[in-house]
Structure formats: structure tokens, C-alpha cells
Length: 589
Image 1 (tube, helix red, strand yellow):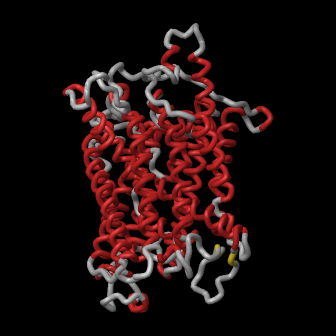
Image 2 (cartoon, rainbow, N blue to C red):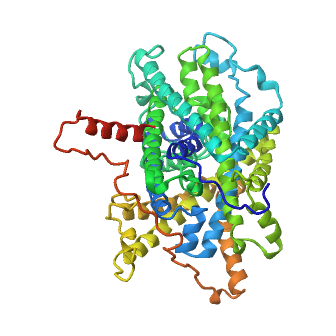
Image 3 (cartoon, helix red, strand yellow):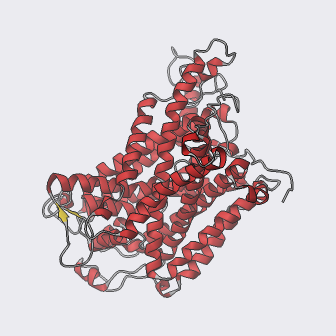
């Protein structure tokens, strides 16, 4: 390891960044949480919940994407809040987001360990008419510690690779995931079309005794004969929709990878990496998630006992996936095991990406002395170092060590505890998204003022209507306010059920302690800089828009828009055809 080098290597291309963000989003969340949403809200409302969760991603990722495209700084998740809101807010956001990612790493590894316990109860197989009385993997008897150890080692080794090679591997992973999910959607459409089990209606799960929405919102799901408090009617439907939206958000965590990769991005101004990756990610995730939830709901009723199980314990195995259940209910052999094997691959690759994100966030924090206590400065300097190929091995190792928490999988109850910690990580991510949207609002007005300042030589670089501005979306200010308010409401009411009798102190703490930690960190930084008297605390936001200099797009290199060289000529004219092919390939790759 070099004793002086502290910078990352800018070796990632747009296609690498694109697939890294996509791969981070597609872990076990889509395959398990879509079934959770169907159980909570019903097959129809689950689609609405998925759409609402996508709208939050659509709002936040555009805010983050535009700021990062103009200023590709290291650690944008906390740099922009620190720059446009308050330094203490920025540092606090950085630490809780880093913690969220190391917890997500542990959760993905725990999911891998659970997925090897693939087994259906014989009673369930008999109830759905499955041709065999046994469906399980022989690995279910192995200790989860074996899988945790092996996959943690694999995740750590891949993150030690040079970032260019790492990006190539992530690109392959992302392509495999897109192909698989697309085929999975087609598979479920075929199952619904052939009506192998139910011959009366393709939408049998949408009709009585089930329906578009669930019959009632069970506040505390269990296997007891008495379900406890059940909310019905409009109130029940609204609360089930809200709960399903909050539950599905875990599946979307990871889209911020696009911004985290900014210091390792190559030719930002030439290839519009941030802009294209942001738009492609939003489109792909929205389409695949909504279609996946829709087709899954066509083949499995929302009251399936295995969907109840995943709601009781947030970390379950492949037999709780709505896609595996669809294959079992249609009496298909082999396919359930194939799907479960892919879920292991998917969770592993998301774990790889979680370690990447956490290590880069920690490395960015390590470059800021003010973010650390005085007695930790020597360790901070060591964490700041990188190899000759730009890999921050110190931060990779430290973040990887927190993945050892996944050894909680050895015992059933600790795995439930990790499930609660994962819920806390999602709240931490929501806090980050809320702060990002609020930062964008300040950023928007700041660059608008700069673009009208005739004393600035480069004022056109801040003009959102200028052709060289790297990334602009219509209605972005509205999207920022929308994302801010939606995320704020999700933070406050993410687990309203904890307040309903019987009150669960453990669930309450897991859902809301992150808010306390966030404000405690902010207060600690203000005490460090301004003293103990809160009345003397002052906001410290630099509002800096010249460091680094704003990036602009090289004229004639915009790939996100279709512009024909010869507008009056036919499309098949060689130059126009070449432009069309380049445009199409830019959006497809």
C-alpha cells in the first residue's frame, strides 16, 4: 500500500456505473418484498405501493444526479448537505448512511445464509396439490455460519480488485439480473395464461374471496387463530397501502450508487455518465419492479401462508418468494430450486455492492479531518490511503468487518434482531434522501442566482437552460419538494404499528432510534465547533459552487438526445442512421 496516495482512480465508464447501481438495487428485496407487499395490501394495491416507492426514487435520484453531474465530488451524499445546509448535517448524514450500508451488507449475507435453508412444509405441498411430498435442499442442515463465512470472503476479495475490473464484473452481474428478471416476468405471464390450476379467470387472485385489495389490515400478523386487531374499510386500505409502500422501499435502496461512483467516473463531461445512468436506472427499476409485482400477484393469493411468514420475520428463505410460490402452486418441478439459486446470486452481488458503497463513503469521510474526533486523526489518515490502483483497502476492511454481524444467522432470534436493524438502516437511508432533497432546493436557488450574476465569467455553466448544462430535468424543483415531503412522512410513520396495542418496544426502537442518532450527531458536531450553549450554535454552510469548477458537456457530444445531422434527409440516410443507432445503443447498453 502506498504511503502517500489518497485518491481514487477514475476508471469507470457509464455502463459500469449504470449496472453497479442497478445491481445494488436488485438484491433479495425485489424477490421477497414484492410478496410482502402483496400480503399487506393485496395484488392491486401492491402495484400502487410499488409505483409510489418508485416515485420516491424518481424524485431523489434526479436531485442527487443533477448536483453530482455539475459537481462530481467525493462523498456527495454528505458533501452536498454539508455545503448547502450545514456542515454538521452533512457529517451526520455521512455517518448514518455509512452505517446503513454496512448493515445492508450484513443483511444480504444473512439472506444468503437463509436462502440455503430452502424447504417447504409437506402440509403446504399437499394443500396446493404439488406432485411431490418433499421439496427442499439438502443444504438446510448445514450451519449458516458456513455460508456467512464463505460469502463474506468472496465479497471482500471482489472489493479488493482494481475498480475498472470491479466495474466489469458488476456490469456482467447487472446484465444477468436484467435478463433473469425479464424472463421471470414472462414465466409468470405464461403461468397465468395457461391457467393450469385455476380455469375460471386469469385474474382469479383479484376476485373474491381475495380481491384487488386485501380484506383487512392485520396490525400484528401471526399464526394465531385470533388475528388480533384488523382494520377494514377505507382506513384499512389506506394503512395497508402506506405500510406496503414503506416495506417495498428496502428494495430500492442502492440507486444512490450512481452518485457515490462520481470520483471514479471517467469522462463525465464527454459521455454524460450521471445523466444517462440516472435515467436508465429509473426506467429499468420502475418497469421491472411494477411488472414483477403485477405478474406475481396473478398467480399467488395474498393470504398464502408463506407470505404471512415473511411478514412475521423480515429475513426469510426462498420458499417465501411469490415467484417460487407461483411455480409450486402450478406443480412445476426444478423451477423453484432454480429460482432460489438465482436469489442467492442476487443477494451476493448486492452484498458486494453494499461493501463498495460503504467503503467509498468511509473513504470520503476519512478525507475530512473535521468529521473525526481529535484522538482518531492517525487512524483517519490510514483509512484515507489507497493502493497504487486506487483501491481504499483500509476502508474496505473496516466496512467488511461490520459484515461479521451476519453471523447472527446462527440463531433464529438474533436473525430477527438483524431484521430490525435492517429496518433501522432503511430509516437512515430515508433520512439521507430527505436531506438530499432539501439540499437540492438550496442548490437550485443558489445556481439560479449565479446564472443571473453578470459579474461571473462562467455564469453560463450554472444556467439550467444552457445546452452545456450536464443534467436538467423538467419540474425538478417540484420533484425535490415531493421527495422531501414523502420521505419525511415515511420517516415519521414508517412503523405506525409499533404504537398499536400490544406496544412493541423493540420495533419502536428499531424504527425510530435512527432519528435520535441523527440529531445527536448534529448536536455533537455543533458542541465541538460552537460549544455547549445551543443558543450560540450557528449554521455553517459554505454554499460553495466553484469548488470543484462546474462540469459542462462538450458541444456535440450529448448522447441522451436524438439529433439527426441532416434533419431534412430520410432516417435511413447514412449519417442519420448512424446517429439513431448510437442513440439507441446509448440507452440500451
